Image (cartoon, rainbow, N blue to C red; front, side):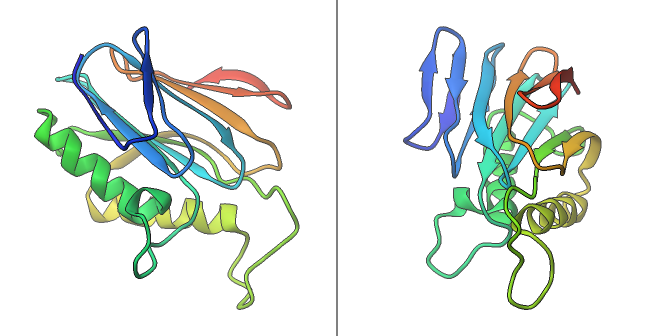
Length: 169
């Protein structure tokens, strides 16, 4: 199994756990998982021809000076795409599925541009569009947490939520 990941991800029996502010790329038939998505955004990328997949769990919308790139939606997508390409993916074939971006608390930014969850979703959409990546499915918003499992063989993204149940994107 060839997996590219930051230091905090841990592979276990064909599964790689992606932590908060983390990402992983797989070029085999493993499953990438993450949990604890509230206002955070989960970005699942998949090349159906090569089965190269990537999953990011980003906390905030846009990278800040000196920030850890995996923590931010925009820069984590760039990392995923770069590592997926290095693992054999063709960026022109990559599709995206996104989940998360909930409004967990009634806080908005000082300039009134929406909750962290809303801004994470907006930045994710903008960044994917900039790279020409189509979002083919999403489970976003609301006020509940989610856990994700990305099947690298099929590109299926399983979304689990105690509030809304399970779904497959």
